[in-house]
Length: 142
Image (cartoon, rainbow, N blue to C red; front, side):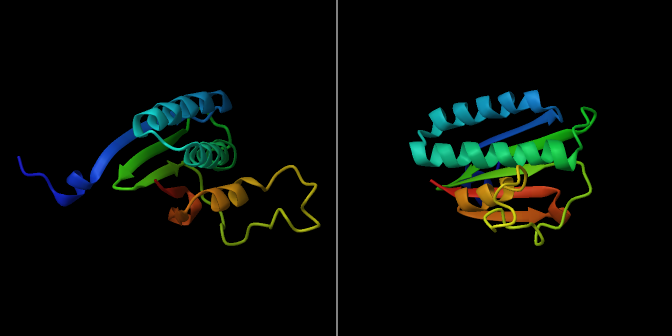
């Protein structure tokens, strides 16, 4: 069997699906805890990965899949070298990620919603939105 360069670079990968119910966020938290121990993440990286991933998953459940338990959220966590990538994908229609209100603007400071994307963008080292916003990829330097 021949191993490709990509396979050599991948140190760890977890793929899993959760039904779109908020109580399933606990399953995501558990996987992140396990990965943190396995990779011996620093407290700072662990906190950033945990909060950003939980926000992305929460958004996928509520906004993407409209909390429909018949729809799943796919989560892939992949370590390649010194980078951890978290891929969160919903089955919704996507959203215009370039037109999200700034939660720090005076008109938005007191609003309950709208902070998830802000947090994801500030806690990850890189963020990508794919397939019209149905997929968010969070990247963290280890």
